[in-house]
Every structure is written in structure tokens, then in C-alpha cells.
Length: 280
Image (cartoon, rainbow, N blue to C red; front, side, top):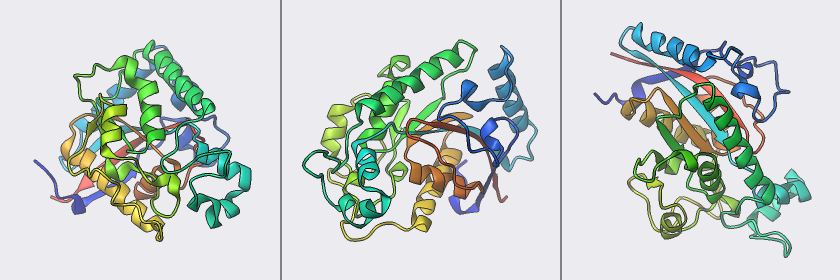
């Protein structure tokens, strides 16, 4: 049964991960065990057994999912913002495609550092899979190249092209408008560069959502994030899902589930246990 999206309310269940301690901000981009507090060899089967129990003992209107929120590796726009400073970046440089030395728009690639950060993420998954962490049942990804490439490097060796487990979702994109780095490439490019990824229905060839003159508000980004959560909880039976995206939209997810912003570095991974409650 598909539940009307507007009837859902979200929050998180703390106590499983180090990142749940909202007073702790000095946590590595990818901490040991992805931050899971349980250090035992059977940590992941024990963790998911607890999540299964939560789902089996609900009132029928509540469900729980584990979301791993991954930020893309360093892109050339990140280098440019660091070069000029955030104020000058927002006021001037972000509206251009480059400065003659760095090209950041539209839709920049990962830097060498960014590619390495994705490899580090892949290695962290491999380490935890040796402790019986199963792959997520579904992988969602932003349509921007830096996120898709990060997702590809991190997971592709584990996925068969026939599984269709990775879906590109329009609403997983970064805060959109004005900044050329946030304008996506064509649908044809995406299909050619990432042939094992699925595009959700409704993709246009050109990016019709990016506006050169108007940037989204935080509230609009949070509305998109809520739609993504509604889609995941309404249509996906998997308990464990991955979302590879961007700092802005990740913090919008956190706002929707009642968590404060989190300074997730490029290449970082933030796991959260999300509870959804819907009206009867």
C-alpha cells in the first residue's frame, strides 16, 4: 500500500552511532565501523537484528530504515571555493564556469583527491563487509557527476549491472541555481558515462530545474529532501539504503528528521536510523 506522502512524520533513533552524539563534531569523515558504537566481531548482524526487531514490534503505522548518507568526494568547485573564500565564491566566482586555471562549471568532475576519497570509502565498506555488513538493498544518487562518480567508485565492484540497484534521483541534487557547479549535464551524458545506473522517471535531456538567476532557499531544499524520504519509505521495502549526494541536501535530510546540521567533509559517510510514522 502506498501511503500519502503528506501524512508522514520523521525522526531518528539515536544511540547506535558515534555521530548520534550531537555534541561531538570531531569525528573523521569515515570513522571506524562507520561510527557504529558496537566494536564486537558480530556488530553488524547484531545491529540489524535490533532494527528488524523495531520493525516487527511497531504499531503498524511506524517503520524504521537505516540510511547511509554519503557526500561526494572533493570536486573542482570545492577547490575553487577554498581558493577564493566562501564570500567571494558566493558573490562572484560561483556564477562563472572557471577562472582560467580551474574549471568548475557546469557540473565539475572529482579531483584526484576526490577520487581517492571515494576509494577510501570503498575500502571502508570492504572492511566492514568482512564483519558481515551487507550491502544496502538500494542505492540512490544525485544526478551530478561528482556524486555519481563517487557512488560508482565506492560500490560498482560489488554490483552486477543487471541488478538495477542504483537509481539517480532528481531531488537528491545539491542546492540548485546560480552556482554553475550545480547545473547537471545532459541525460545523454549520464546514460553514456554511468550505464549501470537507472534514471528515475521524468528526466529531461537538459537541466530544466537549474536557474541562472535564482538559488533555492533552504526551505525548498528541505521540501525536496522530504519528497525523497517519502519516496523511500512509501515505495521501498529495503531496510537499508544508501544515498550519495551533497552537503546541502544531506543537511536538508537532517533537518527533515529533526537533526541539526552536520559538518560532513567531502567523501564522508553519515549513518542514521530513521523512524517514519504515518497517520492511519
